[in-house]
Image (cartoon, rainbow, N blue to C red; front, side):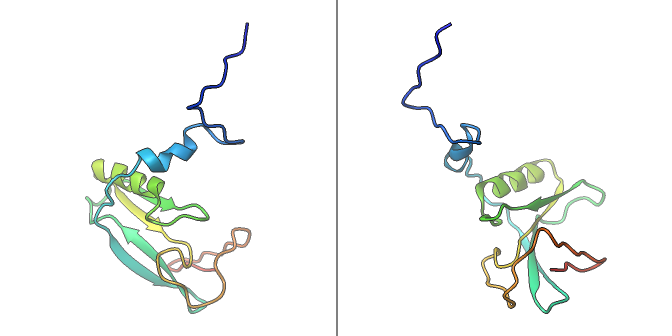
Amino acid sequence: MKPAAPTTTSVVVPGAAPSDPLGPLFRRPKLPELRRERMSTPDGDFVDLDWLPARERGAPLVVILHGLEGSGKSHYVRGLMREAEERSWRAVVLHFRSCSGEVNLTPRMYHSAKPRISTGSCAP
């Protein structure tokens, strides 16, 4: 069998699905109305959370963590928030430090290899 010839419309990205680069172009849902909550961290800094408006108590909660270069305004985060809103689910975006649109107070961003979370607070 003869292999298919590549077309001029195909997108080839090593290690990625062909649709990955197209997501931002075609998935631009309107950002739902969100409520910002700021949580203090034990090191004197903060993290921001963006919540969908209040939903029915007991509805599923979707916790969304953006990618390394992302934020709550990323197309995939907006899409997930829209999906949660359409299902009347609760949803929150946890912004990594300095990714919520405001630079944090300490030089430390986040360290995925050294998580430390205690009840009631978000730790570095």
